[in-house]
Length: 493
Image 1 (cartoon, rainbow, N blue to C red):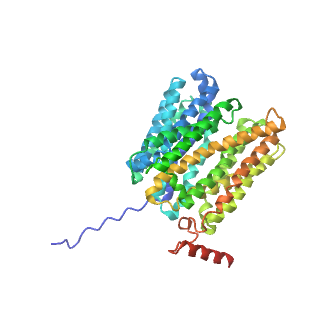
Image 2 (cartoon, rainbow, N blue to C red):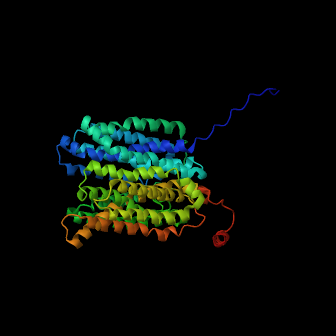
Image 3 (cartoon, rainbow, N blue to C red):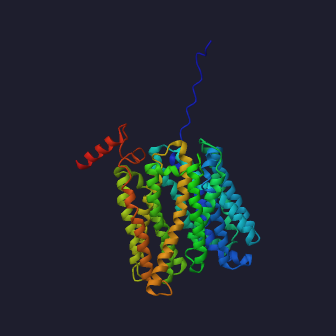
């Protein structure tokens, strides 16, 4: 006999708002960005406590970069095996534990070891956090989600210098690391409560040989590019880069012969992904160079203090944050291809105006220009970071996020190297013992020229690239040739 009045079925749980998911993931990125910028302000104080010279503290930064180089490529495979939520939560926990170990370190060697351990968590947080977002958000909300994801990451560098200065001045430098604990606990609780534990498909055994080759290659390249700004380390830089490129060539051979390599180079054959990696890499050279060149110019040739120059440079971060509300609407109206072509030129030329800055310019004008630079460049990266995954199948999403994040980090270091080499070359050409305004102008123009080259790749995006993500045009099941022909007729009309 059936119940005449069966109990009402429970309503299906409502999916989480994409903004909430993005902010949960962003809490980890905020913690990492805040940690990096705060640490830079505290290195001299830490050096005194450890009884070493301040330049010796750079080994702590190097140890962190080494962990990134080794473990970022492996992040996708690990997330597939154990689940994205599990790995992301573990990464946050490792980063927090590493922070506590850094705070407790009594000397430099133990501090370096703690930073390397902390870097393991940082290496997993960035790509796996992006993977969590890609698997949790509907494609139509992906642009907005990516925009929200980057907001807390932008706030970290803004708060870092003043928070770091306050802690060093009024507290103990160890609180720089203890501050990560409450942020991490909040993020960890939200991840375990609200994020689904999605798994991927693993095509074969873990690629230990590939991990060793990629780790050596990327580690040498990271350090080589980072040290390129030190003229007294030319031989070391050349050696590191030579080893990095040589081992990198060996990895390419290995990846072609391995069914399931640690970094899947075949992803570059996917049109939107491969084009986004190349064009985005060229653009990130300019983005990596700007934070290196601008503060130096403002302090050395404008005569500003570090605090004053920081107050001006923060304009780019403010511009980046203000862009987030506009990106979805622009992409929906214009589409990815047109946006990337036009905005790529505008954002590059915006940074070229930095070559025209002079001490007699009103600071509000410089501040306003830098805000616009941050606005347009942030839009460019939001578009790249989103359209890259347009044609990536779900089974390869984890490999794509780790691959993309690896190149993202590497090219920021290449930007510093390019800026340093351009500045040094201009000084040699002009015979200046110290960089002058003209040398900085030349360096800004060089990195701008590199960024402009991305236009040749932006035009290679298909007119319909990312249509389902942006909502610019509803995709129809037609052949690529018919779609292209229809687009051309619409354009001519």
